[in-house]
Image 1 (cartoon, rainbow, N blue to C red):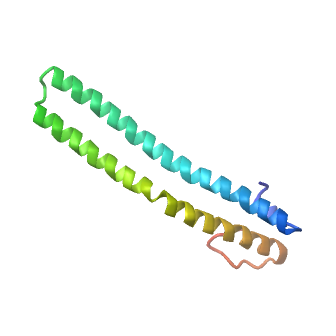
Image 2: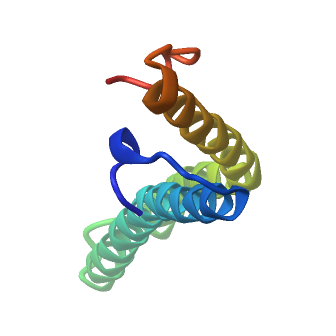
Image 3: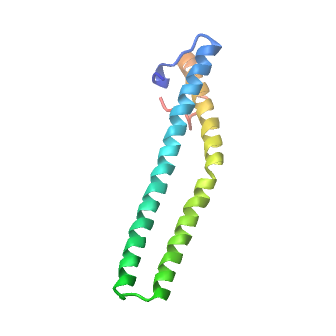
Length: 122
């Protein structure tokens, strides 16, 4: 989509296309943030798993210590998954904010009046 600062739809279809395009862009941004968090935590889990396996193999830690370390990793990863479980709510809020950000820009672009200063920053 073109920059919202220049978005002045002449028809409802143009408006809907603009809203859809902006929602797609904003949701991709939300997903990329969550995806990188998940990938980062999976990487940490993988590194810890390999390290714990090596330490156990060389008897540098006990099975009980290994279990405690893996349990901590499980708790951390569970927190990540709980956060990811909230993605539908994050997505819904993103969609709502995006729709009214577009509405705000259209009104501002036509009138110069900013009804949504939290969403529209000229």
